[in-house]
Length: 358
Image (cartoon, rainbow, N blue to C red; front, side, top):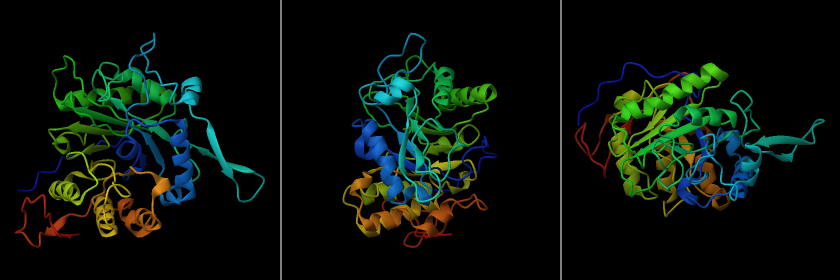
């Protein structure tokens, strides 16, 4: 398979120069989410050193909202799962003991904060949406409501929106604040046209409020977003859903080996969420998985139960030297293959991708 021609430019909207790092609910919890889980996860991320390592986003996937909108056409939070959010339209602060000084506590904010407010002791929290009439789980989607929803997410203090497009109405998979296309209705436009509706909405909301959101998209099943998404989004999924097994990980890495030229600052191929801590991956496989995703300059979104992570898994995910490559502010390009090793150079092989990268 030959190399692709690099896209001329990326969409520098001023947010998230390097790949996003954080947590996403879907891989481990799917729809089994609630306010307690999110609060506990944020606290565990802080206590275990993930916040200090750079993991600053806490992303809620599908299943946080209801199946209908309110009388003003706005999204409605599921008040049974998220009573505080539904009541106040924001998250309250959780606190942890301060170590010194006059402050008895330091605020650990898991939502309702802007990017400029986020600091070394805060987590911005975000939620998923769908670029169809409904999400894949059957909740309210954003198609034809892009501007309303962009305004709502900014009002709620969100920093990150991920838009998902899934063309199979019987399948389901969603990702952090995201827009999904499980129910396209009568929309007949191209993938680029559909996703640009959110770009246009975000640009308008920025003019109105001064706030711009990080915009990640998932165009599901065509898997060619790198050819059209760089001018309209900050990151885009580039292959099928990840699974906690080595076979799927090598498939994704094989695809990524041919499209590294499309990644640069503010624009990243998204290899999907991390599976470290899930399934039966060995420690060697976890190390290779995390290192490959980091060196490919993919977003690093952990999708596991932090309370169940082993010390070895924590050490892998917080390795400062590996993270430093992913978050390098001087070099935006990822590592790319220079020699395939077992196979002739340029070989497409999902079970044995290129071995030598630089």
